[in-house]
Image 1 (cartoon, rainbow, N blue to C red):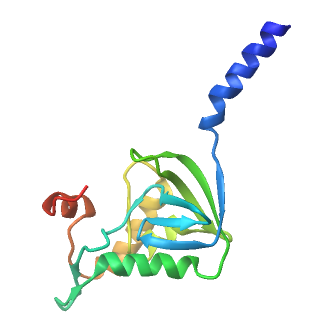
Image 2 (tube, rainbow, N blue to C red):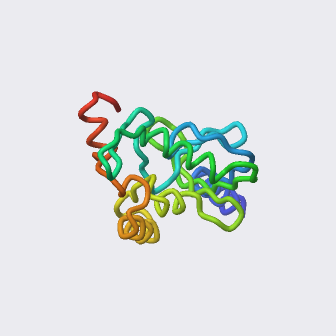
Length: 159
């Protein structure tokens, strides 16, 4: 019996870090796919937004600060509401990755549907649908021209 208890305790220790953690509180956007919730920095799971200093062009060819516009959209979606994030692992730098909600609304999905973030392929199917919606409606960055955040980082020597 003692062995069974010890084995169950060992399994619980192994399972502990794999369980989703919930982070709640007010939020402040750092960029279009990262925010501080309460005292914890959280990266939004399944999305990639333009880098903060990244630019793009409008339909009329006007230069826009699309990275800052993405950050502003994330701030708008989280302003004056309690945010609830469910973690799903961590990034390479140890930052929790999470699906975050403002009431019933999936903030990650809203960023994509508004056209200020891209769906990370293969992570969340609903996010790919939201990206198709944004493209079809020419929302946010889809209104003009841009390079992907990954390409922008590569071209600008950023991580």
